[in-house]
Length: 437
Ligand SMILES: Cc1cc2nc3c(=O)[nH]c(=O)nc-3n(C[C@H](O)[C@H](O)[C@H](O)COP(=O)(O)OP(=O)(O)OC[C@H]3O[C@@H](n4cnc5c(N)ncnc54)[C@H](O)[C@@H]3O)c2cc1C
Image 1: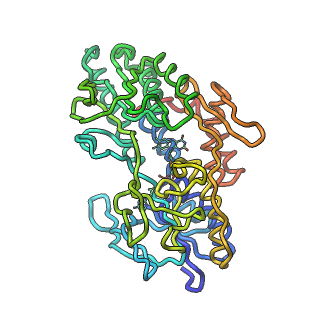
Image 2: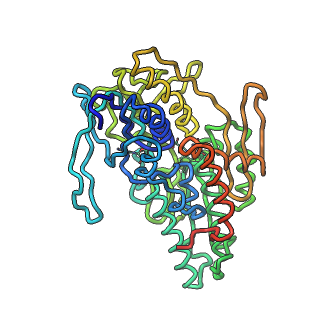
Image 3: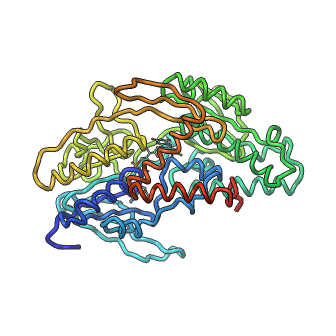
């Protein structure tokens, strides 16, 4: 680190943090106006909205993972591996936990890292709301490792059932997904697609219509409760056409190894269970070194994205609660918001270093797109000129795919993103459509 340059530390290299580090590296870092460091607890980045595809095996996480060390070299920032676990605001230090090796031996001891400006962007974790059995028996989709593990279990279960040759009625292929937000809905459709792909790849003892039972459970009175009601109907119709059982207005009260109890006493048998029913910021953020946090442990920030009690600490994305003037609820925890906030902070941090006043962040909702695997995509687009338009099918699918390309563009620039898209298209026929290992 160059001693004379101010040190900007970004903790969390996800949808927002990695975009910010990549763009700041090119501006402040390369121009030697600041030393930019990114800290993450993992060595690789995978865009979180892809995790349900990883879990279903329709995306190979190894092909899309980006190495932070390489990105740091390309974009002019420094990468530090480490798990953020504490904060010392008085001395402007963050505390990182010791890093363990493959045999659980300490390879890097606990350490501290000084900052002049700090951006906390560590995302969220699944909220189990304290419901008994959830943590023990459900899969969460918080990380690539969890999604990979679910894909392995799914494949192993299919292999087991195929080798037994007596699939029908065994219940081994019953999957329950709790939470019918975009993640749950998209996962249900991906799993349906995967089951049919397995059969196409030789799992001929399995008849998906009879042997694979997919159940989606939602406490609200409709699926996709945080999206406009007009999206819920076509999505639910499509899921039902695929044979997915949809329970709305049902709360899960307990989970066992064999299934889930609903509040009305109904038991849903499921060998595989995914919990996608809500998020919170990690528990250690709660009141961290006197900063203001809310009931979901999110750091409360002003519209400048500065935490309410410390102007040199910013927070963005899922771990931040940012006010949305005119609305009761804060900015929603989406990749769209994390991306917008990262874009604002690229300029804001430079201005903060120069002592200039900061602009306020205003969330712009450009609409939502929900992909039901290869079957269909539904969504709405919002713009100043066109107002709100509703889309479905191929156009919606192309736009849905382009969201990931926009994230790649923020990381790599336009030319490399185009090359990646072309490479993807050309190599597609050489890859299995479902991960088979
Ligand atoms: C399956 C799924 C599908 C989704 N689909 C969509 C979608 O279609 N559209 C949409 O807008 N949103 C979607 N989301 C939500 C979206 O992924 C998040 O809102 C977005 O990723 C938040 O970005 P972030 O930068 O705040 O955090 P993240 O992208 O989660 O990144 C957090 C980063 O912090 C790191 N980290 C965590 N803890 C620590 C620590 N203690 N120390 C160091 N590093 C740490 C993590 O390794 C990670 O790299 C989806 C989420 C899921 C799970």
